[in-house]
Amino acid sequence: MTQPPTTEVRIPVGDVALHGVLSRPPGARGIVVFAHGSGSSRTSPRNTYVARVLAAAGFGSLLFDLLTVEEDRDYTTRFDIGLLSLRLLGATRWLRDDAQENVLPLGYFGASTGAAAALVAAAEPAAGVAAVVSRGGRPDLAGAHALGRVRAATLLIVGGEDREVILLNRAAYAELRCEKELSIVPGATHLFEEPGTLESVARLAAAWFTRHLAGPAAPAGAGVKPRPSS
Image (cartoon, rainbow, N blue to C red; front, side, top):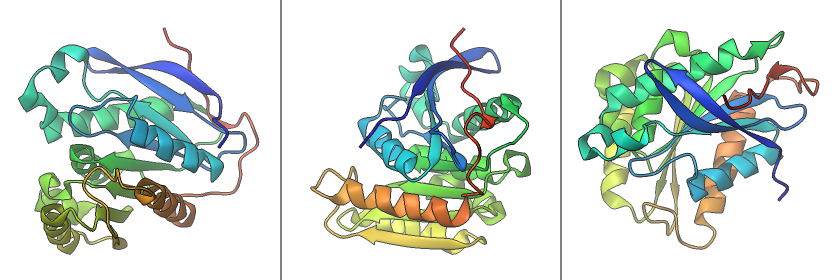
């Protein structure tokens, strides 16, 4: 699988600057912003793999750290869904400000606590995201109020052996008032470490974004452009 060109970026959000990696394959039809789980980062091998699969399907990606190194040392901060969603919204605004001429459709891919942050952010009309995918997520942490306000098409993916999280996802699914789907990957545990299970996640995500996010193929060089680190 060919890795598209990537650019290291720094994203100003409030009084911090967050490190990220922006990738945009030629002719990209959309950009997917990743929200990692607690204890993870922009270098998450699972999210990086999914981003490569999405690139093959014609989607760019932004993987970035939701927290600074200092903030991540505080265990409670890792679970501050309000803060994480504000960081995600800040990164979304940064992408839109970086766009020229054509603005590509945006989507969110959240894992674990990052899925809750993605849904809280997606509930804000200003986010303007068209689709959300949750991998082994905790959408219940978004809260019923936010879940009921999400309008982006939402796919919840859970491992078949991740039984407690299945129950939590089913409860959150019932609160969603958007186009939605709950997909259970047989034999998978929470981290989708079993052979073939992460590949299933990536295929499901690519199909969902193709269905709900993809616009017409954009000319190379149009839309969201990589911004070098500063």
